[in-house]
Length: 69
Image 1: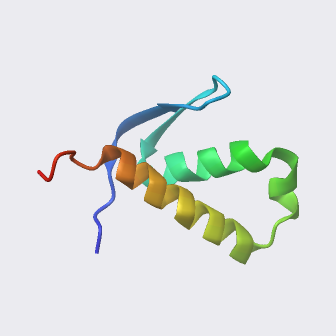
Image 2 (image 1 turned 45 degrees about the vertical axis):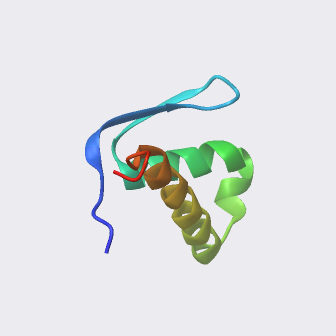
Protein backbone atom coordinates (compact mmCIF):
# COMPACT_ATOMS: atom_id res chain seq x y z
CA UNK A 1 0.00 0.00 0.00
CA UNK A 2 1.29 3.44 -0.89
CA UNK A 3 1.88 5.69 2.08
CA UNK A 4 0.34 9.17 1.95
CA UNK A 5 2.59 12.13 1.34
CA UNK A 6 2.19 14.50 4.28
CA UNK A 7 3.90 17.85 3.86
CA UNK A 8 3.14 21.31 2.55
CA UNK A 9 2.52 20.43 -1.10
CA UNK A 10 2.07 22.96 -3.89
CA UNK A 11 1.34 22.57 -7.57
CA UNK A 12 0.86 25.20 -10.24
CA UNK A 13 -1.59 24.19 -12.92
CA UNK A 14 -1.37 24.98 -16.62
CA UNK A 15 -3.88 27.82 -16.20
CA UNK A 16 -1.57 29.51 -13.66
CA UNK A 17 -3.59 28.62 -10.56
CA UNK A 18 -1.50 27.43 -7.61
CA UNK A 19 -2.98 24.89 -5.20
CA UNK A 20 -1.53 24.15 -1.76
CA UNK A 21 -2.46 21.35 0.64
CA UNK A 22 -1.19 19.57 3.72
CA UNK A 23 -1.23 16.10 2.14
CA UNK A 24 -1.48 14.37 -1.21
CA UNK A 25 -5.15 13.42 -0.91
CA UNK A 26 -6.19 16.99 -0.12
CA UNK A 27 -4.13 18.26 -3.05
CA UNK A 28 -5.74 15.71 -5.39
CA UNK A 29 -9.23 16.74 -4.21
CA UNK A 30 -8.49 20.43 -4.74
CA UNK A 31 -7.08 19.70 -8.18
CA UNK A 32 -10.16 17.69 -9.18
CA UNK A 33 -12.55 20.35 -7.86
CA UNK A 34 -10.65 23.04 -9.76
CA UNK A 35 -10.71 21.11 -13.03
CA UNK A 36 -14.44 20.30 -12.82
CA UNK A 37 -15.47 23.65 -11.27
CA UNK A 38 -19.28 24.04 -11.20
CA UNK A 39 -19.83 20.55 -12.61
CA UNK A 40 -18.18 19.05 -9.48
CA UNK A 41 -21.32 19.52 -7.38
CA UNK A 42 -23.42 17.62 -9.94
CA UNK A 43 -21.23 14.51 -9.89
CA UNK A 44 -22.13 11.51 -7.77
CA UNK A 45 -19.95 10.49 -4.84
CA UNK A 46 -18.68 7.54 -6.88
CA UNK A 47 -17.75 9.77 -9.83
CA UNK A 48 -15.98 12.23 -7.54
CA UNK A 49 -14.12 9.39 -5.82
CA UNK A 50 -12.91 7.99 -9.14
CA UNK A 51 -11.72 11.40 -10.32
CA UNK A 52 -9.92 12.04 -7.03
CA UNK A 53 -8.28 8.59 -7.20
CA UNK A 54 -6.94 9.38 -10.68
CA UNK A 55 -5.70 12.79 -9.54
CA UNK A 56 -4.10 11.20 -6.46
CA UNK A 57 -2.17 8.81 -8.69
CA UNK A 58 -0.88 11.71 -10.76
CA UNK A 59 0.11 13.67 -7.65
CA UNK A 60 2.01 10.69 -6.24
CA UNK A 61 3.73 10.08 -9.59
CA UNK A 62 4.89 13.68 -9.67
CA UNK A 63 6.54 13.32 -6.25
CA UNK A 64 8.09 9.88 -6.93
CA UNK A 65 11.88 9.67 -7.07
CA UNK A 66 13.21 9.93 -10.63
CA UNK A 67 15.89 7.80 -12.21
CA UNK A 68 15.04 4.50 -10.51
CA UNK A 69 15.94 5.62 -6.99
